[in-house]
Length: 584
Image (cartoon, rainbow, N blue to C red; front, side):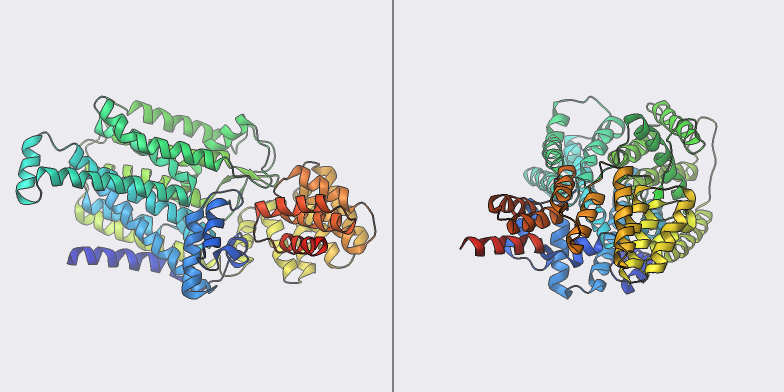
């Protein structure tokens, strides 16, 4: 018990040293305001709120359990950021402990697994998931993902006892259980593994990748025939995965970048190697990793990563028989990363990596790390011609130094979230051509009424070429300063540059509505909705205009559809109230 408490204390100290500064930070400008501050559904655990979070998306992801965790935070401390940040850190501590536990089960190496767990606890690549409150979905999903895997691996010890077979079970029952109780323990452990998997899926759909990890474990670690018993054991995970993938398909991204299949493959190659690079050398980390311009195999930004990805795949296949632990580690990494390959663009922009996407995949690489050190320690050849020994004391010293270095880097990375503009300023230091960072920073300055700074950020971006979003946000700045003609010109230019983006049409319609300078507002709002069915504010505004013209049924339809997407939309609820009063 004392040893367990010391291990828990070590993980708590490590995580709080690395990310504890976030306790003094507020809500980040990226999604925190939308998902937490302005989200009425997280203000209490009423039946109405619970029903809402379990029957809607965010608007793209189905993450009801994340919203429930926000509701609990609100009940405890209201909208005080401290409680939200503390919860994130504690969830990360739980994940780090589970990484230690899972790796120990997989490798049998307690000390090396402890080192790997501590590396996970303090690694700067995890800063985004821990510090960014909207990253709660990755943390919460991982808790149940790893908990489910831990219980599954535990159930195997009962399901498939060592070669002693019945004698092993009988010797166990003499001191602990009867045979029937052993079966009961198996049933409970296996049941809770499935339950945790369900909870993981309710936190984020990425948890379906647990199915891939379990299949890899069956094929590479358990070995043996893929017989009927394994299929039965696997079936609940398959059924839940199919159900939640169908649910996930109901989510709808607002505006997803149109990227071809071959381009996605090339970007996937780049991101796969990039995360390994950042795991080994965690420098220049940021919230946005843009990939602007043409995506070509022969580009210096892509080709080296394509070759290295091919090499990684070759190593995995070559190791399948003689070194299955290598294949399993690489397989874990790729299978848990694979779903993110589809999500490489939004709002007309392409990015090749997101730090928090590496949260689960890095565990596969840490597994390989533990296996390699285990073999060097015991003089077991890692590969055919290697037979290196690393004394334990050297491992301890090097491991301690590594933890200290990672803590310092994580502290620096955490501080980039101190101010709303900090994360975008950091991105522009590393990627000055990032359109996403420029419009994000411009938006923050505009909301702070720093209109000159807001426009200057956009103007600087023109040095790397014009973009629809630069024109759109320049229009916002002009509108804020009352320069209606310039704002109109910018919105029209944005619509011409990207006719399939709904934002310019809505912005132009909103400008006309506020200034009363045109009768073309309704067609513009209708166009925005045509391009994006989930555009709640456009539907609410359009409903109000229909109501003014006496088109009651059309107004009602817009309000109802707006409320289907967001039941707590203030404008849609007000419009519906006005409609009922008019009908009465």
